[in-house]
Image (cartoon, rainbow, N blue to C red; front, side, top):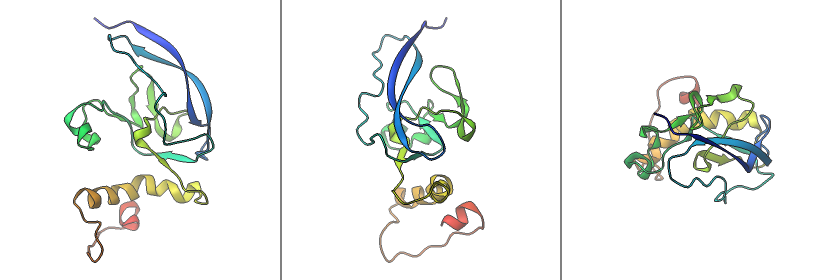
Length: 158
């Protein structure tokens, strides 16, 4: 038996087009009533209206399981992919084909001013794919050498 749904109007930040430029955005959020208090948008502190931002493959997670607490959210059983998945309210995620995306601020990155969207986009996918394991395994020290085999997205970003 499912839980009843509650709809709540919230205000957050949104990039309304592919520029990634943030502006205030009000929308309805549906969630299941489970007995816990759901606060939305009240703790967004890293971003401000006017920031240009981007999001990668993961847009949400539970934040409570072992993988989440270890910063390896890709192993969270409740993670939400940016495409071919569903948000907690049951709406589908549509990645780059969406007219809007809801993204936990943990998975949003600020795009530096002066960096064009077409320059930033490859860094959000292939660039992160290369950077993440290097950082995870402590390979970010000066003087280390390594090789990345392959041509195309990951190989070029490496």
